[in-house]
Length: 411
Image (tube, rainbow, N blue to C red; front, side, top):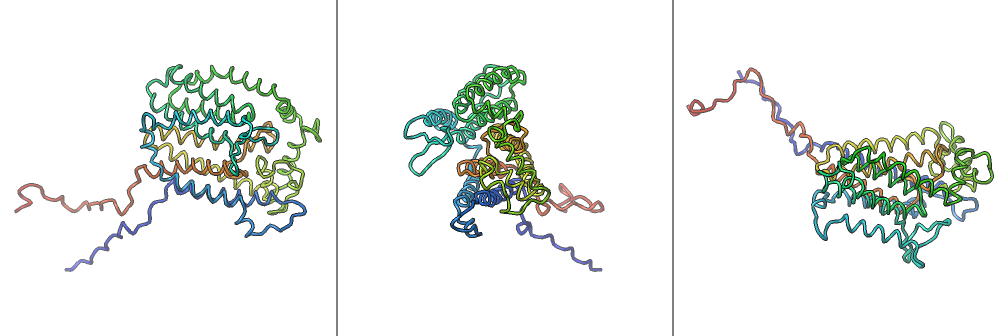
């Protein structure tokens, strides 16, 4: 009796590749950049514009060009061989060069003809048509330095000298130079650096012992600048001086509260018309809440939460300590920066110059953040993939005898 032929399994080569966390990371970054271009263009609207804002105008805007460049840089970063880079030694080792370049760039902002002052702070380096913030470069570069150092001194990270004081001395110098003009970024770098070192094996009590010194340094940085004292006073009671130091915080909270559940509609916000300062940069989330409402704001928060979940799933499976620590530092930087910005915009923290990653206007910030997140995708590509169903051998039936082994098989 003829038995029906069994169906042949599908060709495993034709099966679609499994969706990895790196793919989700790429989609989330693309979504955040798209929302950023749209909302920055909307927040930039003003009364008496020569030309109306159109879809073609948004696609050909300066912000769209930066977003496209940031996405391309992310794709380039997905091909970076991090495992090979971490094994470079001697003059090819990137960490010493990054540390030296960071100090030089932070000092260069104070040179006449090189440093550029914006809103009373010298945070920019302007070389012809090219301008960038050295603090943005240092914020990401210090992660490479710490991850490389911790990977090479893995056995001594539990000692206070090798594992904490030596790397934190460099971090302290960089934070001190940054705090002269940008206290918020200095605090962010300090927090992330301590967290990365503790994750690398440094003792928690080493970090706690540094807490009094950090608190004194922060207090000295606040007291030495009157505008920082005013920001702290505005945080404690913004309505004490609603037309002065409390104006910024009040307008931000008014924008967030005015959006309601579904918002005033895209482009229908009111606070951006001369009421809310820095509406395209540090306080863009307030415009998002006003125009897209609670639903739009919740969607943005969901994108950041999904980005962190995808990133942490990659970091947990990283192949080398260098990759694991670098990925953790990247995610902590994005996460802390996002939380600080949201707290400032909603009036739950003093005003700081911390932008919303991949959303607030800023070509340097978009490009560097996207590139560093692309390094996480590069880690995901090098990890062992789970075998697909087509690659697994077919299970043997219980009633089928095992194949014969030995001389009996020949006969």
